[in-house]
Length: 71
Ligand SMILES: [Zn+2]
Image (cartoon, rainbow, N blue to C red; front, side, top):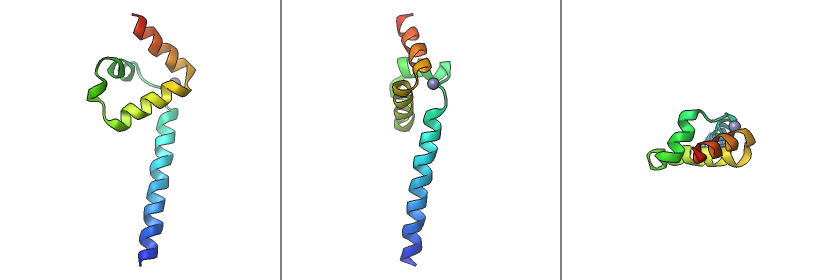
């Protein structure tokens, strides 16, 4: 019985990691970029992390973000 619980929570962890990776690959919307810039505190921790990761790895969203910073 315990075995199934362990397998179950391992699977759940994997699915969570994969869905976070998939979310990270999705480009940021303009709303997300301005929210991140002006109202970062209103975003959930998961969203903040996703946006930070995405800006760190995606050149085109980083450019859009920098453009907004300069506006
Ligand atoms: Zn992007």
